[in-house]
Image 1 (cartoon, rainbow, N blue to C red):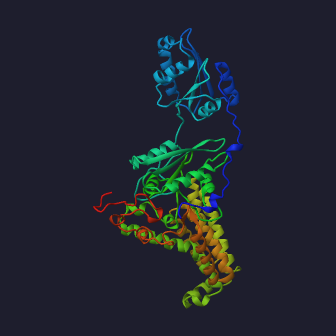
Image 2 (tube, helix red, strand yellow; image 1 turned 45 degrees about the vertical axis):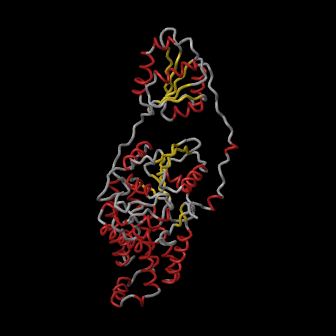
Image 3 (cartoon, rainbow, N blue to C red; image 1 turned 90 degrees about the vertical axis):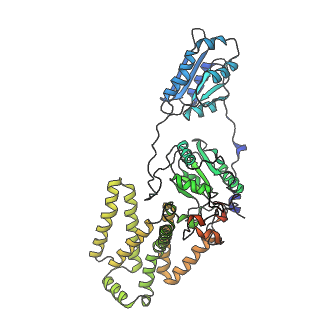
Length: 519
């Protein structure tokens, strides 16, 4: 039942048969190969070509690489210096074939850890553009590709979008090898697997699927790989492209995959039988499948004691309720059901609304849209200015709107509480979905009052129950219900009591802690 998506199975597979093979075979002429590579790459200014000869009568060589993508120290020490210092040995084998010479160079003279042989210029150009160095030998239609990657990387820093008080301070970077290292530091299991893909017809970005063999369900891996193989894009610069392509329903406002820059969060997901997708060039890693309950969890829930973690989660659920329903409830009660408001509060609200030119729904929409504009402006502006705009702008505009008699003070309080509640949600993508739903509930309240809110709530629940993430119901373990998984849902039970992995993941090894309490 799980890990299957009938709708996604109907997705048109990439038709590889229609793609013609334009591979250009290597020539035995060194000069011709150099000319062809330059022509293929249109002779960029950062393309370095270095022909040379070993000794006075030795074979002719050439190395080609992109300046800025390679470590020139590795090129000088592992290739040039070794070849020049091995003049006598190379000249001893001058009578052997060029192919045998190429093999001997690979085994005895190139000290780089990764060396491979290719036979087409397409493979050579891709390797050169990826930061590797191509070594050509005159007289052979093969060449060596030597790993010399060495571009500048951003250092490991603290998470920007997922801050915590207690917990690790490292975050993923844009380098996929650094990211896999951060995961391996946390999971030293021989069953940890990293399966590579290449995404993008032109960009050819490296993508890695991470999982723990023996825990993850095999059908989940098959489904993830199948969807990744359907991707047919020119370029995928960020994991958001991958997420939108392989998710179950792109019409849903809810994110069906986690995106995180925290290695500890990814490691915890892998031990639960989930799959992580890492894309080179972005610090945001995707975790699949995702559920509604998991969107409300934060890594800090497990770093604090279970009572504190349970309290924080309960507060988040309450905050999500306020972020969705509070403005809509204000509109419904003021416009349609004032009798449900306590008398003293009703008189107070009526006094503050006296003389206002707009009905409650227009008042609420004006303030909510203003708050969204301030929030977006605070993100886009430079960090010091953005914080000032968010705080001072909200205070000034709110005070000015009340003084001008456009909105009531109660409305300003409701908008402020709603904004604070939405900020408390740990997932930024999920918080945006909540903000979108808020406007839908406000429209429903404007037309039908509380009845409209109830109808909208029923529709949202129907959608959540029918929504799936890689075949896993989005509402699980609420519905379908798994009582054992409620130990880590709204409340977090003490860690010694959570002996099993999530049942809905159907893991091959469902034991997290054995009977003796050992991991």
